[in-house]
Length: 112
Ligand code: HEC
Image (cartoon, rainbow, N blue to C red; front, side):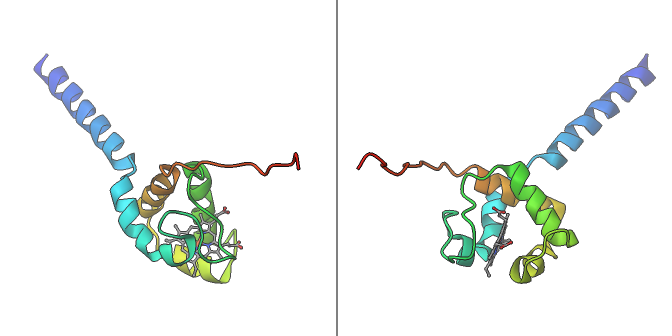
């Protein structure tokens, strides 16, 4: 009975730990994004005309692209260099930061 209790406790601890380990930290993402701001803008709206807006992009998409830049599946002179040193956690946090930005869109008025 005691052993079962300890086992369950360890299992619970492991579960809690794994959930914590995989949760993205938006604040850390914001910090890390300082190195992205020069091109993608502080608010995720690109300041460099060749760079895409990242504000409001889904975390799944951002993560996929950063992993692809890092492993060479997607190539770009600047982004390949930038993504190379990023750790999995950095990528998760950055993706969460940009996804959390709320974007409002105004469609072009085609009635005139
Ligand atoms: C020197 C300018 C520059 C910096 C700094 C920079 N990027 Fe980029 N980024 C670009 C450009 C240019 C592209 C478009 C790449 C292409 O044409 O394939 C891009 C593309 C991306 C994409 C793909 C977006 C999409 O819609 O497909 C992501 C995600 C991204 N950058 C994230 C980041 C993150 C996160 C950082 C900081 C760690 C960062 N970038 C820093 C210039 C930059």
